[in-house]
Amino acid sequence: MAAYPDRLIESLVLKAVEPASLELSLRTAGRVEQDRERLHGLWKQRQERAEYQTDRARRQYDAVDPENRLVARELERQWEQKLAERRRLMEDYDRFRAEQPRHLSASDRERIATLAADLPGLWRYPTTTGGDRLAIVRLLIERVELTRAGESERVDVVIHWRGGTVTRHAIRQGLRTYHSLGGLARLRERILELRGEGRTADAIAERLDREGYRAARGDGFTGDLVRQLLARFGRTGVPAGVRDANDLPGPGEWWLPALAAELGVKPIVVHRWRWSGWLYARHLRGENGRWIVWADAAEVGRLRRLRAFEIEYHGRRTPPPDLTSRPSRPGDQGLTTCLQSGGE
Image (cartoon, rainbow, N blue to C red; front, side):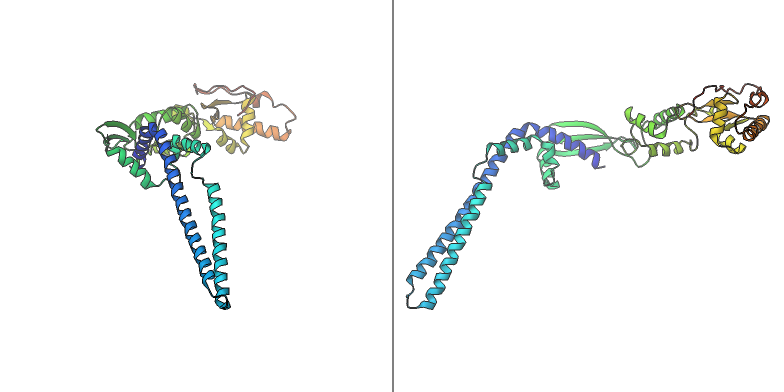
């Protein structure tokens, strides 16, 4: 349960410390200068030690008996070595002073102020550890109480701030299953309604997110998740645009690809007949809704003869009326005649 309450507490803590950003920047600038002053002090100690060691080597060289040439040469070498070490130390210190002067420049102070103003950025900065964040939270918050509303996704959060203030909040916590999801019936109804309008799973997911619905785990919807829910609701294999059983193929009706397979032709051939007004067809809802074609046994026979005529004459002759005229259908099939010249 930690992730969602943590995000809430993080946002509240950042909001609470936001007014302190100016003071934070001033303290940070002062702390940086103190640290630099300490480092400069260390460099000074190193310089003093180098000066002492160089002076000591010189005094030892001056004190040696010149006739003791072997000892004199060794002491002279040690003195030159200390001189070289002191020179390198001074060069290193010069570079350090150029990179980190004792006092911050105006640009340095401006950069610190910008960073302090961006508290969320500092909070999430890679060098800010979990221990750092926890320490800040403990300075502001005494304790947090979490209570789930039954088995639903709602979690009530009570925050006891140091100083006595108590604030109450409500968040949504992801669930493992949809069984306990509040508003599941409403979600189911909306998904089936959108599916009945002919929307694809991806389009349904986008619409649910836009309308404020949330999945069981608290995240947004995806096309795959909508397809899983359709299976859960018993709508596996049911095309988009089907609202109830009346939208499915009835007596003597075929899904257009199924009729094409029965006739041994490609679906585009049946679509061409549909465009020409040579058969009865109806379209399911939605931009990509599927087509249903009425063709009883006698109609299937007519369509076979129509296709045989087209093959024989290679489409160079117009089929006779007895092959292109739609027969009367027994009863009202509730079909709309498709006479348009466009296609899917």
